[in-house]
View 1: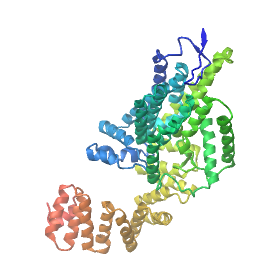
View 2: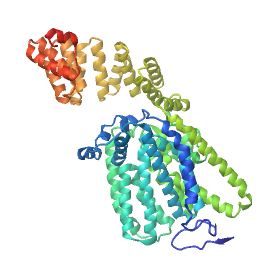
View 3: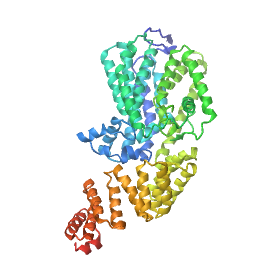
View 4: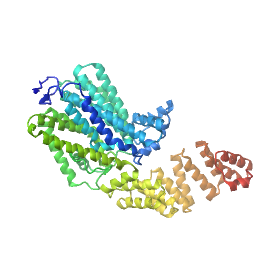
Length: 605
């Protein structure tokens, strides 16, 4: 038995028919939501066997000193220090809490990510429950697609993408509360939306588009136009402006590429390609890759995609008078705006993680269409349609399950990228860095040479192959890479250091000293650089007084390193000051730095 849902003036009617006692209302939602959450949990459970990768996990977690200190000063540092050219202090705070409980145990970070993903899936259920006038079938279907879709695996299993999960949580909460505000007009709800939006921004600046999403909700709920639509969102627009300014200021040196890299036509084509590519991947999420690099040249396909996107979305948004379509595609576009590469961010033309929020509205439109069709024109094909949908669900679940082990190690991750993009210098370089950490020098050099084959000027490959050559006692080869690195990227501190070491080990002492003299003022608090110059003064130039100054400076920077006291003791010995030589040698010995021959020489037992 079914009844026609009555139209309400204050909210949209998206469902043609609703079976009485089964879909509408807020009771009984657990039997819809619980199986969805259970399926998602089982799919993602294997991620607990994954480790960290070298794709930003070092900067976010394993090598991030901010995680170790939750004192008042530590919290101040978290809220004042950008990480990987992003300001997202609440994300760093959440990682710091993980560290306090389990230090660098990978499974604890992955378990937290699964938990956050399940919360987000629950919030998606409630958000769609609101939009669909209480339809549990549509809500559960959208939540299931959101939770298991292969394009969302990256956001969950990549530890460094904690920011995606956290910002989405508060973003969804803000939209859910805003729908409540539209229903009851209580100012406390509007205040809560602003607070939740601010928290979302502190998790990831991508939340700056939240006020635009709220405007779409105004339209969706048939709110009569007035300037109050905008005025009530002014605090959010101000916050968005502040975070946009901060983000651009921070990322101008790293993540946002020069606008001169590509012409405006090419960059617009990236946007058109992205809109179509992300849309197609909702249905055919294969093949997948952690990195989808920019093409060397902009293919004609990108321009064609732009024409299709402009024509198709323009027609849908402005010609078809359908509130669901306008909201759905509008939400999709708004939440992709920042990553369509008109202003190029990062190293990829598209990225799977960027779909985490935008796909919500695509799934909503799809499930709403299917529900209405099954109630009307397609009712006699119901079993067939549901069977096909079931096959898609199984396929999505299987693809997600298979995708998780790809992220287990850096080697497995970048090997997979190379399968899809064999000419990616970044993939070859990052895979080689895993071998570098394992001191597997032949594989390291081989991989970095492949990277340089495809891009002879690739900065990271030049740097790390030079380092690998230094580690394998091939300073002449290191010098070639280091010299090119320095010429191409003269402002890079790492380039100065590698070039200094290469000159030093090829006995070009004056050139090495010149490099150290340029390097140390740029990084005055890095003791390693000053110690190396001191060693150069001591070993090659016999300028002991200058060596003393450098070793004393190293002790100021790090008084717990015994090597610096031992080096200083040698300087005093060479200048005939045996008293200070003995005193510093004793300090070195207490800190674990011992040179038996030197100790015998000065009579230290």
